[in-house]
Amino acid sequence: MAMFACLVAGRLVQTDVQQVDPTHFVCQITNPETVNHVVIFMTGSSPFPDGTGGAVHFGFASPTGIHWHFVGFISNEKPSAIFKISGLKQNSPSAGPSFMGSMNPLAGNSSQIGISVEPLDQIVQQTPVSAAQASHMDNVTQYTTKLLENFYNFASSFAINQSQMTPQPNVSFIPSTVLDQWYQSFKRKLQQDPNFWKR
Image 1 (cartoon, one colour):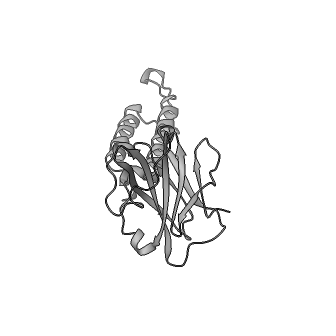
Image 2: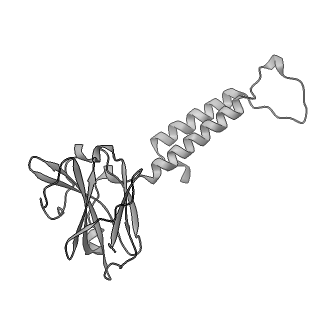
């Protein structure tokens, strides 16, 4: 059984990861232009040797060979990771060591995921190309925005004008303009700094 597997959303799990040499593995990704995210995970057949992990690279064909991007890593402590690969073709290859230079020409319309077994202390010093990070903060921002929109729409559905109000001493009313001001202010702060609410 292969040590690694690859999952592209909407496709079957790929377990055909090929071992190129003792420390390098590759997996073909067909029609990469239709792929947004890819998950790389350990299958559990064998762990990494102590103190090592797998540096994950995304490679695509170009007239000058395969261009590689370092996108992140997996390890025994973090046996799976999701990477955003859409848009990487437009970026320059990431700085730092390349994945085995320009090995293995790519067939047709395909790209490769490369996994290089390296010391973890070296892997963590590498900087992944920023476009590859499947941002958790994007998910938080999306969730928060949807939550705010839902609350705003729900609360606004109860809005009445002054002529429709009947005196109710035990009920407090908040002008819908206050709710609108708060909503717009919160959205603006969230766009400027998704972490502002932690302060």
